[in-house]
Each structure stands twice: as C-alpha cells, then as structure tokens.
Picture 1 (cartoon, rainbow, N blue to C red):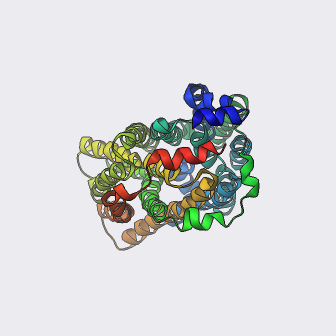
Picture 2: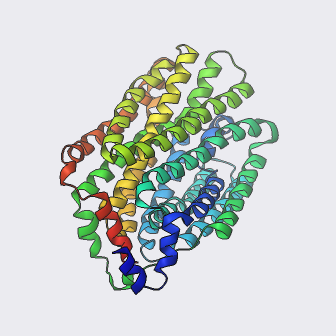
Picture 3: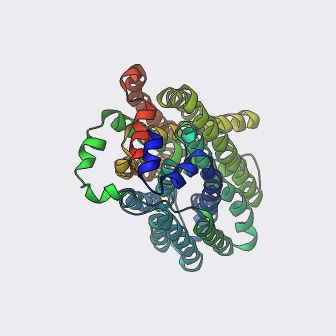
Length: 441
C-alpha cells in the first residue's frame, strides 16, 4: 500500500522519509522552541508571595488570576484546534510564541494591581493557547506511529521542564532584582523560542482533501466516538488534579518553609526550587516513562495505573505540611511523576482513534473540557484555603483539605477509562486508526 502511494502521489516520498527517520531534527527543534516559549506558564504562581503584599492579594484573588490565565488559554485552544484542520501548524506556533513574549513584556511594564494583573495574564493566556496543540498536530504528522507515544511523552516532559524551571529562577531573581525585570527577561526568552521554531521546525502542508470536508464530519468522528469521549473525560479529570497541584505547590512549599522558621527570601528561593524539582524533574520523568509505557502496554492501562497512584498522593500530600521534610519531598516527587505520567496516553490515544482530518477538532473538544478544569481547580483550591483559614483550622488542615479536593480529578479519570480497558479488544487497532488517515496525504 505504501509503495502504491509513493508512485501515485508526487511529494509523498519526501514526507514519508520524514516519517521514517528524518523527523528527529525537526522534532528536536520543536521541543527547544516550545521549551523557550512556554516559560510564562507558572510564573505568576511564583510571584504570589511577592505580590501578596504589594497588591494586597488574598488567596482567592491569587487563584482567580491563576485561573483566568487558564481560561484565556482554554478559549484559544478551542479556536486553534479547529484552525489546525485548515491552517498549517508552524505559523500558529511561531506567532503565538512571539505574542507570548510581547505579553510578558507588557505584564512587566504595566501590571500594578489586581485588575491590571488579571487583564494582562488573561491576554498572555489567550496567545499562549497557540503553542501546545499545533505541536501535538506536528507530532501526529511527522513522527512514526510506533514512536508516537514516546515522542509525545518527551514533548510533554520538555513542556513540564519549561513550567518548572522558571519556578526556580523567578523565585531566585524576583526578590533580588525585582519581579518586573525578571518578567521582562522571561518575555525575551519566549521571543527567542519563536525564532527557533521559525528557523528550524519544518512546515507540513495540509492535505488537499480537507477542502472538500465540512464541519459535519466532527459529529461522527468526535462527538459520536464513544472511546474518544471517554479519553476526553479522563483528560479533564487529569487536568483538574495536575493544574490545581502545579498552581499551588510553590505557595505550599513557601508557606511550609516559613512555618519552619525560614526567612522570607530564603523560603521563596528554596520553595521555588523544591516545587521546580517536583514539577520539573518528577514531571519530566513521568512524561517520558508514561509515554514509553503507553507504547508498550497500552494507553488506557498506563493511564489507569498512574491515576490511581496520583489520587492517593492528592489525598495525603497536604496533610504532610508539618511532617518530616524528607517524607514530604519524597511524596512531592512521586506526586509530580504520577500526576503527569498519564498525560501522553490521552493525546496518543486520540491520534489513534480519531481520523486525522478531524484530529484538530478532537483536540479542541479535549481542551474545552480539560482546560475548563485547569481554570477552575486553582480557584477552588484558593477558596478552600480561605474558607478553612476563616474557620480557624490549622495550616496542616487547610492544605490537607485543599489538596484532597484535587483527588476528584483522577477518580473521574479512573471511572472513564475502565470500559476502555475491559473492552480494548473491540477498539480499532492503532495502525488502522492512525495510518489510514496518513495515507490520504
């Protein structure tokens, strides 16, 4: 079948060679450019202890700013996903990276209170939404099927490192050189990421057959696809836990260190480093391992295992606020690993069970529900912290109940994935589901 396609379609040989081995350099450039462009993701989380006094922020307001960033990203994801079925991935990524950098420069210059900070983080969140999904579509179009789970895991690991590394250097630099100068530097790094993607990421042409397809295809390909709906629900639960934990891990670590007698500047730097280690190192290990395991043992099976362990971490982590430091750090690292290790399974599974000409729309639906959870979870944690504090509970109980709320996410994911595991024999084989749309190129 492959040889027939090569003979009958000019240009297929070039694209096939990219799939068969020449894809690696473009994938490396994609990862580097995305790493640089994603620096802004959790920067406001690090600045919460600094801006709490400067802007008179309470926990609910801080959670709202964290959530509105996710809300802006959600709106962009929904639009970008459908655009990906009509527009090439590369220009969307490049322009988004450049606009994210400009947005962080504007935040550094113009944010001076809760209202302006909220508006500017919303703006950055919107333009930020043009980075992630085009990269997934690029992977689906250029990486061979049998390496797609691993490649998705590596890409997600790179993004997690991009989330985590600023937790350390922003926490280290903001108290010393000022948060505005620090955020201006973050914006400059993101502009560099846009240049890397413009220079080295290959441009993949769209299939001509898309011009004859209307929006009605999404009804059967996505909305009527029961396995796809279950994957999307599990991804939503995954995001509730993941982004609630990511958004509040640095403030938790800082508060924990302050309660143990650390001075404020040291607590900011060390708390950022501990959070960066759990999110970055743990998440990177989890993403790569989870992607690899999903290639070998199955998407639903791998995700189910990781969801079960991360659920237990959510239930116990906050209650370790006053516990032994070594135990807390160990559980934080396990939390960072398992809360992300299921992520490659969802994207890779959608690439297998949704036709490629509707994959952008499937990603849009996934992000519509999944990123709604990312906007709500940080706010919900902030509200629980404020309510438990007003009720006079101890700091340990405040954080214990706040993180326990996040366990609802993996619980929903486990319920959604169980039928996919028990009926896996009835699902389309990955090769049939993924390669058939590719041959239409």
